[in-house]
Image 1 (tube, protein in one colour):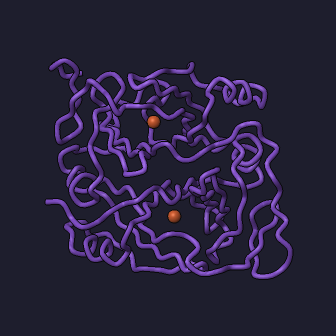
Image 2 (cartoon, rainbow, N blue to C red):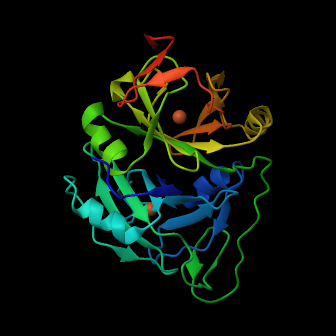
Length: 296
Ligand SMILES: [Fe+2]
Ligand SMILES: [Fe+2]
C-alpha cells in the first residue's frame, strides 16, 4: 500500500574513493564538479555539486583502510512524515536521525539487498559560513579558497542512479510502495532494468538481476551524470585521457549515454536527458516493459 513519503529529488550521491587528491583530478578537473564546504564534521568527505546543486560526496575511508559503499540520498517533501513511514515499515535496518551543520536532517535505511538509502530535508536550512580549501577540507573560519574547475564538461545534475537488486517484486515494496517512486517503461532492450522516476524526472534504475552484468560491467551499479552534449563531452573525456568503455549508445527515448570509470573503478555513466513522455511502451507494476504487446 502506498505510504505518505513524497520524494522531491536526489539530494546527493555518495561515492567511495581512496584519495581526494586523485579523485578531484577526475570529478573536479575533468567532470567539472564544484567543490563546496562540507556541512559535516567528518574530515574524510569532500562535498561537491553539479550545476543544479545536486551534490556528489566523495567519501574516503573514515578509518583510512575500509572503503565504504555508494549511496543515494533522496530529499523528501516532509521529513517527519518520511521518518515516521520508514520507522513504521517492514524495513528494519534504520539509523537514528542526525542533523548536519546547515540544519539538514538525515536518516538511513537499507533496502532488502542491503543497499543503503538516505533520506534528507532540503540543504541549507540555516546559514553556514564554513569555508573549504581546494581539496574540500572544511573549517569554520578562514577564507574560502575552493578553486573553480577548469573543465570543459559541465554536469547539469544526476540523471539517475543504478541500484542492484535480487528480488524484484520484494524490492518494489520498498521503491514503488514505500517510497512512492513511479514505475515507468524502460527505454533499453531486454528486461533486466526496472526504471522508476521521481517528480523532477530524475530516475532510479533497479538492476535485476545483478548477474545480468556483462563482460564490461555493463549494468553494474552506477551514477549517471547528465550533460547537454554527449559528443562534446566524449571529446573532452578523450582529451583528458579518460577511456570511454565501448561507444556512445542511444536509447529508445533518445537518451544518449556512455560509460567511464573513475580512478577507483567506480562505474560512471554520462547521459543526456531522454524524452519518454510519449513512449509507445507499456509497463507492469514491477517494471517489466512491453512494446506492441510483446515483452521486451
Ligand atoms: Fe549521504
Ligand atoms: Fe544507467
